[in-house]
Length: 275
Ligand code: C2E
Ligand code: CA
Ligand code: CA
Ligand code: CA
Image (cartoon, rainbow, N blue to C red; front, side, top):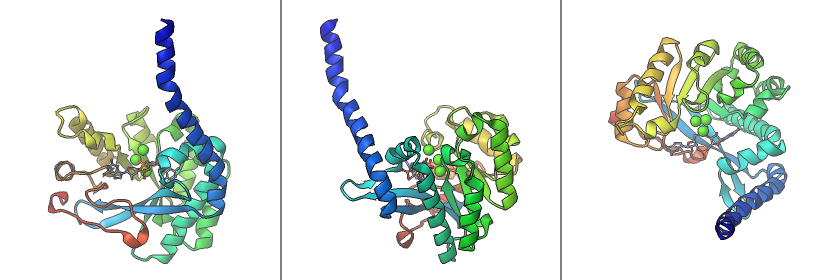
């Protein structure tokens, strides 16, 4: 038993250390990275299945790290959340999104991801308004993507903030729907404009599992509640045509366009995508 224990330790120790080391290193570099402007927003199109047109883009944050190259938000967002840097980083995202909206007439709307920590920050709405107003951007061109984790802790306060944001004109999207603590009652209680079906369900379409039934129910319910239903992570023609036939409003995924810097955006809409 002693030996086995030692083996397990030997197997897991290096990997865990590497992860902790990496996080620590990223945390140290994050401040400097923000100050030096090492971040960039990549944009990924959302395509309407009826008109086959791009309705908006999701802004996805990238870090051009001087030594590590492009670092994924999956790696640095949790670090920024743990260190508190997410507030500064999140404001940079708002600034940059507004800069793009003010500059690019072709970009009608942008969605930005808002961390639960950023959302709960006391000043969030006021600072958002400040930045948007100063950029001269119509708040209706900006959509805020939040996840269910925003709703579970302080339900009443979250609802109040969401209603105030709606009153100011911002659109609100519920991201990664169907994961986490998903409760259908969230959908009717909160003023969402958009629901994004988590890409896990899209990936499982056609596997004879429950994904089809779940996706159908989400589309049906979202439609009845007057929300725009978006499927994310659409990679194949089969997924696209299933979703289009099922009444999904908009599609997002590699099939239609990769997240890219503004100047390199390419969108292709195969015939199967159009309902
Ligand atoms: P998310 O909001 O669910 O974003 C969608 C993710 O799916 C993105 O990963 C996108 O690149 C990826 N994706 C798009 N199409 C496909 C596809 O067809 N197949 C597959 N497999 N993946 C696809 P990314 O850019 O690495 O971002 C990961 C997560 O990081 C985001 O998940 C979001 O939670 C977070 N994130 C990104 N940018 C920001 C930001 O500005 N602020 C905050 N707070 N979080 C961000
Ligand atoms: Ca998102
Ligand atoms: Ca998502
Ligand atoms: Ca996600």
